[in-house]
Amino acid sequence: MHPWHDVYIDESLLSTAFPVVIEVPKGSRNKYELDKETGLLRLDRVLYSAVHYPANYGFIPRSFCDDDDPLDCLVLSQEPVHPLTIVEARPVACMRMRDDKGIDDKVIAVNARDPYYEDVRDLADVQKHTLREMKRFFEDYKILENKQVIVDDFIGLDETLQILRESLSLYRKLRRGELK
Image (cartoon, rainbow, N blue to C red; front, top):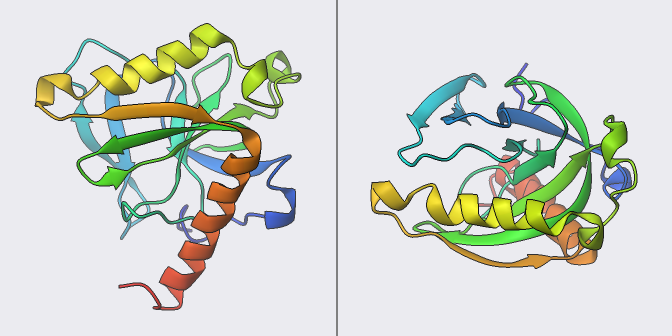
């Protein structure tokens, strides 16, 4: 089983729940990435800066973006989640980020199975400090690698759902060989 290609995602339920494959647990300084060929995780690097992931970090199966990777997702949860675990997540917002590869959107979701986040439904429900922590993490995590990252404003739920749909459509085009 390949976590990028074989995990089913029901597009009719995007606003309520979709699977996210976790690569990096909350609190980690290890940056794991999916090896697209094997479906295993590869240790990409240990973060150079004295920061750690503020949320569980992973990707949305059967999605594809302009950076040649699946769509990234930060999953808010009380506890760290082990790598390669599938989490049922509910989208609330998106963080638009730009790096050396261009636009690198990060969907912000909550663990749909975590009662602490039961009432978090959109951007306005996310604690302001949590948003500041996420933004600051991505502004800082590559500084000591001499790489620049720009974090734009957060995007609301409606536009986030459109980004999700577009990434799922791009994936289908990729699999049909319509993308180069």
